[in-house]
Length: 286
Image (cartoon, rainbow, N blue to C red; front, side):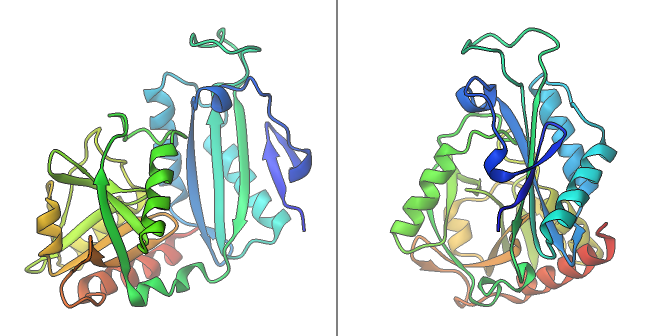
């Protein structure tokens, strides 16, 4: 069954949705995106994703072509048209089609391109990896230094994801100057002596929406939180490790570069934080 997608104000069968070969998102990766999870037909932390979208656009000197209500209406319409109960809504905004390829930005007033589509993920919250945990490898972080902007420049993370799979792992943790930055598509954490440790916000990591919610919920659950960089060796010697993202929610990490983390099983803090996050997210979804 063909999906209905959103393209510049129109709802179209996916096979009929066309974007120019001169679109800046295609030729320059000049665009930003967001992915909002859907549980029970409702959007999780939609306002947070809209705040980050606006920030990303501002950082690139790009206008926001739609209002938050417009985005919300379109998200809900796509869920309805595609019968999505559990899944994702992908949103991408580019600088638009300048009519040719040029490093200079298009003339002022060039229409931007807005794309949205759904992905059905039945049982999204029942990920079996929550019970088994993830195995990760490490790799040098060779990305540009504005990782706080959620751009569509995803080639290097994609290559690392494939390298991890080729080596029998689930993901890669990126390392720079001896410290873990983040995963290929997630924020990273360790637990030591009951303290949840995660890298502090800067241009070096994505300002995760799930990260923000998780740190608040951890504090409310009386779990001590420490925001600072940690090394790969610290992670391997930690009691627990975990990741967060909009689509994975909270998942434990049980192995890093072949070294077992803790007892090699999902730990109690990671397990509890996943339970708390899903419970709160379902309550506040719209």
